Image 1 (tube, rainbow, N blue to C red):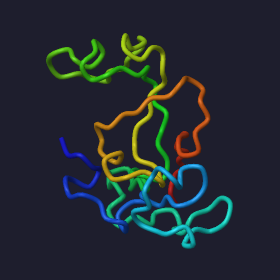
Image 2: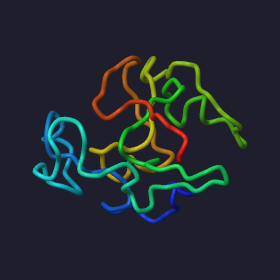
Image 3: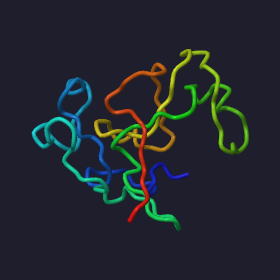
Length: 150
């Protein structure tokens, strides 16, 4: 398994939209990796148009998917469990696994995956998963919307 959609090379600042912290509530505890605060556009929007990441694309027979890494972490269907807990520690290959039981160690938490615009490189790796209370509103976590290309 490759850690990123493009393979195993670690990302730099031109390959996905990540590490763009430097303002707002997270400015004091999440480091700025790629851009300083004065590089951002005000309010919404960011410094790059959609599809900016040089490697942040997955070409499939039906079309190319852009912006798969970074930008926004995505809520997943799973309840959060540690990798050592029952949902993920079973032997063998899993097919379309979904965890629907609360973690014995952290309780009922929602899970999300994928690095966001403000996070560091480790959060971009495919196996990375984080948790927060179900229904939490987080500035860098949401859902991806897709539309068919031209």
